[in-house]
View (tube, rainbow, N blue to C red):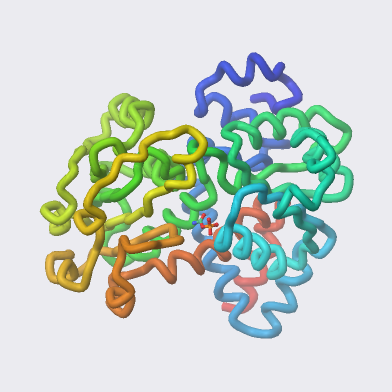
Length: 359
Ligand code: CP
């Protein structure tokens, strides 16, 4: 299968996401990371295994000294033109763990975009100085277009999509899957589980990416629970229909709590109200919030997740319960992103060998 150098942009953009995934490799290995559909089950399992190895190696000073040399020959650019705490900092920490030096633009009013430079020229400029570009943008599809553009220049550096528009947040979905893998380690894994998404599903790109990644697992039921106007997009439902996935749409969160193996809460993404006017419909936030009382109805082995930031969706008093895994979920982001970057640069083997030498 080809790379992005083998196909015109207009032809590439006409492909399905699954077909596009085949063009995102270079020399047979993962290169650009743009959307969830490019990952198969084996990819998810090997990334999870590598993340766990990095996590264990990092427990000692000797291990940290080893990891700091794994990619000390690389530089990464963090280009975040949308606000971020976790994604930015966990990528930053992942780079530090692997010895990658970083540069950043987080506020385009301090870059030459203020002088009218296009996003495209900015990204191409970053590729002149860095070996990897990690980018978050409010413009859906920008990372994808830039991946094609850079692939066809003399500096074809990989791009990682750290959140694009309202469409996808693939690395959040990777950390969510890693969290589910770890949470269900002793209860048969992700296969056969019921995963419930709650909140603003219309604009939650983390939900979209995770729903698609879950297609890699057998017999997973997906519940989408949202107030009127905030329900998941029909494109995701069509994909689930095509894959024969069982799903349920509901607006009654509290009634469904006892059925879930994982509950994935999300906040209302009202920053989008300002740009496209949808879906600024008011609703009773309490009906889509998880409180201490709800713990009684949550299965004993279920997990409560949230990509964060949170507002009132989960009472902080719930945080102490062992089923509330969102703080661990957040930290998992650092390990899985380190594993992802190590994989892009083909350094998995050296990490595996180091881990094996310590057993
Ligand atoms: N989960 C997530 O993407 O958080 P940030 O917006 O803080 O990066």
